[in-house]
Length: 209
Image (cartoon, rainbow, N blue to C red):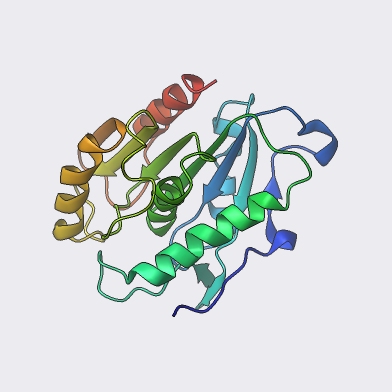
C-alpha cells in the first residue's frame, strides 16, 4: 500500500483573506513535479477574480521542490500513489471552515493528473477540472461512469517532450467518452503554459461561473 500523504496547510497560497472566502467558488492550483506552491500562484492575477484561488504544495519532497507521486514509469504511475495524492487534496478541502458552492481544480503536469483523478474519485464534490500538459492515469475509478457532464479542459503543446506519447494516446482516447471535454493543442508549445492557452483557460473558467 502507498504511504499516507497530506497537504501542508501552512504552505497554501490564497488569493484572498479568509474573511472574504465564504460563499465564493474555489479553484485549486496544483503544480508539477519538483516544483512548489509558488509556481502556479503566479497565475492568480491572470485568472477570473470571481474565484477564490488556493495554490497547494504537493506532499512528497522531491529535490528542491515537491511532487504529487513517485515518477515510476513515465506516463504510467502506479495507481495507489496517484489515488493517495488525490485523496490528500480532497481531505484538505474537508478541513476548510465552509464548503464552497463550486470547487474546481487546475493542475499542471503531475498536478493535472491529480486534478482529473480527484474528479474521478469524488465527482459529487468536484465540479470541473483543468489538466494542463498532463494526462489521465490508468485504471478505473468510482466516478468514471458518472462524470459525463463534468467539464474538463485538457491543454497541451505539440512540442512537449516530457509527457510520453503513450500517455497522450491514452488520454486522447479516454477523455471524450467520459467527460464534457474542451481540448486544445498549441503549436510549438513545449512543457509549459502559453499566453494563448491562458486565454482559453480564462474563457473556460468564466463559463463555470
